[in-house]
Amino acid sequence: AVGLAVFSAACAAGVLASRLSQPLVELNDGARRLADGDLTHRIEVGGHHEVATLAGTINDMSGRLSTMLRLLEHDREQLRAILSGMVEGVIAIDDRRRVLFANDRAGKLLGFVPDQAVKQTICEAIPEQPFRDIVETGLAAAEPHRAELEWKGPPVRNLAIYISRFPGHGMPGAVIVVHDTTELRQVEKLRQDFVANVS
Image: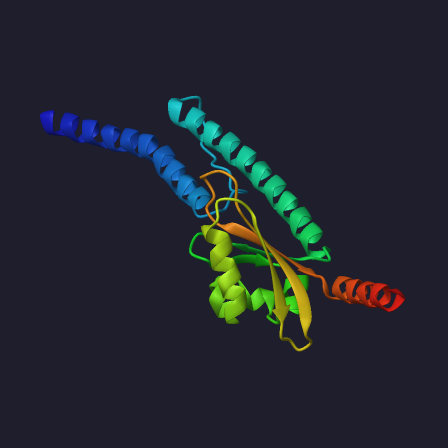
């Protein structure tokens, strides 16, 4: 009788432990899938106990996080579209001088492929020494730095380089804006020649 009672109690304890542990297993598996980036996954735990409440809270959190990520991605795509449509070249670099972003115009003005330059250092992407010197000077300056550069090409261009560090201390790095001033220089030379001839 004692042995039967012990066996019955053990079976009951096993069934109870299984019922209690199964929701925890499902909660753990669901949390792992969410941590791996599957924000569409929903943890299904029935009942009205604390584990089910926790699963519902995690599901709500993953839903809000998914919405926030979609909004951030939308804003990012809008920003990339704006920067890609600019007539100026734009290059963003981090504190290690690695290229984070470069638009097509920057690639055309400075002779590199923007997609291939991402994660390279600015010196690897654009090895010309005069440009590198301007970048280093701009990064060392406390205020935004402007410099003129005669780009040897081909084709030969006059470029204005603006370098500004990202504001604040939370995002180290800088943005480099390149403006083609070749036509402006040519117009200015024509004006000077005209004034000289009139004189």
